[in-house]
Image (cartoon, rainbow, N blue to C red; front, side):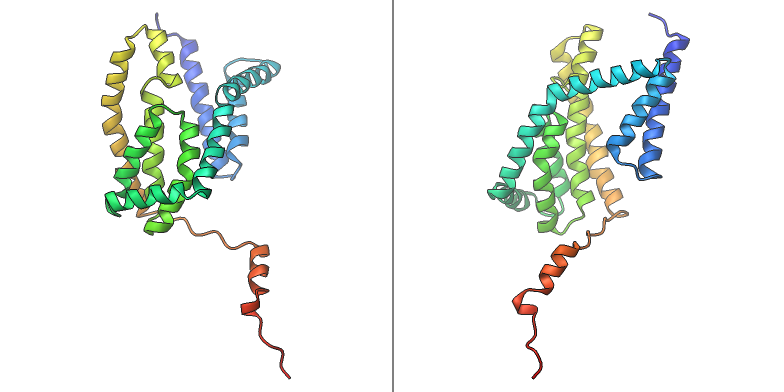
Length: 236
């Protein structure tokens, strides 16, 4: 099977779509979902599809993806909320902090994310870990970047390199590779990859980027002003 000019053009089209998404999000502050829709349209049109076919392919791909992970994401969201409201997330955070401490926290989050990311889809893992990451950030006083990047790296690396996730399985099927060998080699490559992309990069970028807290909403501000403890007696 030889590489053709059409294959080269498809790669260029994909890179152009990614560039459009990045520019829309970073420069024009477009919502990520809308940016990805525009980017997918750019890829479709640049690859030679007619506009109606681009829309049809987008509907088919989006429907297939939603059909395969939509229920999992919905149930994962419910489980994540239960984890936060029931105190389970607080228990997990207390255990992790007692075991790892503040210094080794990014490494602990990386390990936990890799374990969760092995059987679960990336989207479900993110939904489950969000309450843990937010609570961990408040309890430890660390930057959310320093805690969140290792967790996301652990999930994404496992999702992209190790079966039984869809991407590696597609590659195994296309290349007729051995599933067990692919899983072993995927784990071998995943370990140094997640170390660099997780704790190492998280420590580097966390020292340079520290998101500011969101300002209180007007409603909450008005509510805090009207609390009895903040009201002064009228002057005689």
